Image 1 (spheres, rainbow, N blue to C red):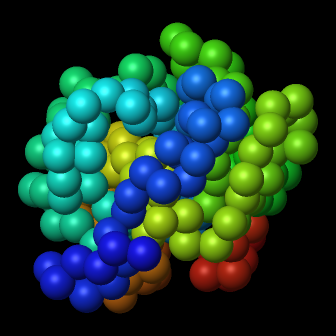
Image 2: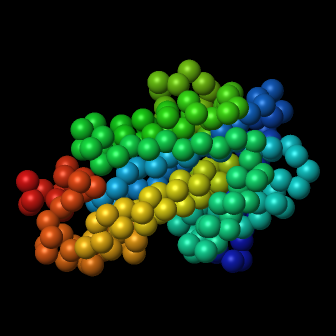
Length: 215
């Protein structure tokens, strides 16, 4: 597997996608999510279909990797490039109320199913990171650290993360006491202090342990 000196780990590639093309699949969608561990805000899932066999696809998307390994500025730049290169992309959203009602894993699946349903190109194979979508009658492969291995999944991770971060920046305007623009709803000390001072807002996931004291 290719290695990157820059990130010290695996660089996502298209080996799985190319192998699937050789098996006769045409439109391979990568899926990933952002926000599963956050205390507030939605889970956002993204689906991306890349032109795997197009000349220069890998070169155009150089630098795309697991969104957690990128700076906010890098993610924003790559977000635009992915949208330019991709054959199709889509997002799905499950808000805090959905997470509280059906649990975060089920909410993640729901968001991914939404993304799947709104793709402008129907995929005939799915690549996923550690989650399966049994409700979709489409061949799929779910494997650990997919966003470190598959460039298509890594691209989806960038789309999901940037989309969710933008939501949280907007929510900050309505709920400025929580500094959602800074921590994006994750469990930082600043977020914990804001909860202690202000209590939860409608964006908070009341089923999560740190919020249980407020019920």
